[in-house]
Structures are given as structure tokens and as C-alpha cells.
Length: 165
Image 1 (cartoon, one colour):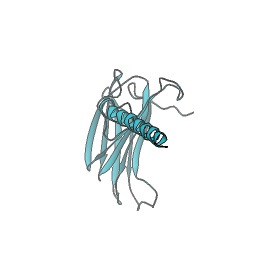
Image 2 (image 1 turned 90 degrees about the vertical axis):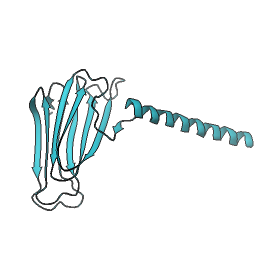
Image 3 (image 1 turned 135 degrees about the vertical axis):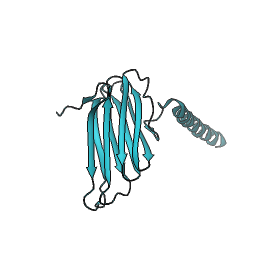
Image 4 (image 1 turned 180 degrees about the vertical axis):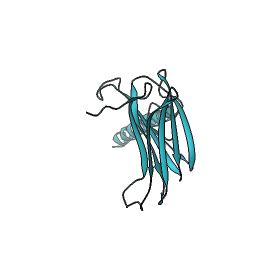
């Protein structure tokens, strides 16, 4: 019986060590996890160009930017990264070097907004705004609802918006 317990303990220890390795590797490479608690300055190997995300909020907010390759989801080459960062009220800018053929969704959501709260997000490629959204809260926020501004691009590097199907 003790041999069986010893094997079970070694198996559990092996799994814990492997999960720990993947977690620590993810802290340094941003690849082991599909989520980052900060907005990166460079996504994967970059190389496609620099995209500037401009966000503004009258209240403390959370900025979320996702990155996804345009490969089929079941492809070995498909990658997805979700990043987010809390910011104070005011204007903030994030310059990110991105690969070509990588798109995603960028959003700013206000925390505890009140009537009159404002949010804005704009995406600049080569100095021009390619996508923008903004909103002002005109009535109390209902339970279960969020207050945010959001844009979606098919390819960040070229500034190509997602085409409606």
C-alpha cells in the first residue's frame, strides 16, 4: 500500500512542478498563459508595425486589449493573448509593436461610473485614427451592465477593420 501512496504522491508532485514551470516560463515569455495583467509593449515577435491605443476615462478604468492571429483556431500557428491593465482617470497611451495579420478587440471600461461619466478609445496606425468609440453615461447604470467603449480590428498593423459577415 505504501508503494501505491508513494507513486500517487510522486505523480501529484510531478504535475505540480510542471504547472509551476509553465507559470514561471509565462512570466518571462508571455506565452505560457493566454492572459497578461498589463498591456505589453510588444506582442510575440512584433515586426508588423507599431499601433497606438489612446484611452480616456473620467473615472478609474480597466483597459483590455486582445491579440489573435488570423489563422484558423484549430491551426498549430494560431495564437491568442488577452491583456488588461487598470488605469486612473484621465488620458493614457499605449504604443504596442504588433505582428502582421494579428487583430483583436480593444476596450476601456469605467469602474463605478456615474451619470456624466465618459470613456473613449482610439486606435492610431501611421499617425491616423483608424478606429474610435466613445460614450457618455446619461442615466444610472443598471445592475449587470457595464459602461465601456470598444473597437475591433481584423489587422492592427494595417489598421484594417473587421468586415461584417
